[in-house]
Length: 209
Image (cartoon, rainbow, N blue to C red):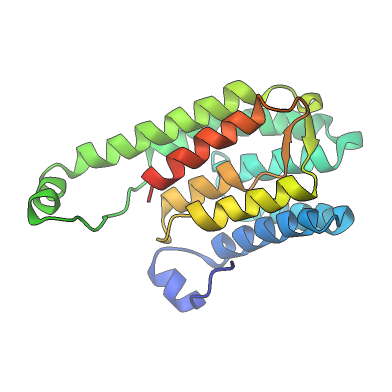
């Protein structure tokens, strides 16, 4: 399900047109894979990479995700892109260090007051979860030649997971989770590796809302 808010509303929420464009392109690429349309997916991933390279800082996890997607969909010429992807994922920790956690609705006045009093601690807790998720993905990512493009069923399931677990707010955790979930590949070996990473990432997505 695509974001339906207007650009003006997104800008007010702190998002740019590029933020929304990248997310839409990544979703559309997965949707194309879910329909078995590999060539359109390649073009959409290429467009997403152009947006990320032009608009996002070098340590943005969405740039790392785009580089990885591109390396998998264009394996013949992926050597330099693969190296760039590895470097980008390695630098994402600095992006997480500056990530702003949203102010969440609390079920009681007590919890709301505690969050206000200890806001830095709340934000650091979110960053710790994001660092753990990033480390899990990097550890289990492996070499690009151990990955494969998602088939139709897997891409459809990835889209369903994003619809279900996408943070509702237009915020840094949503940008991070988009990079973690909107990946168009998995490990070739079934039942382990990349599939496990995404199971863990999805579990964490709910806690990042």
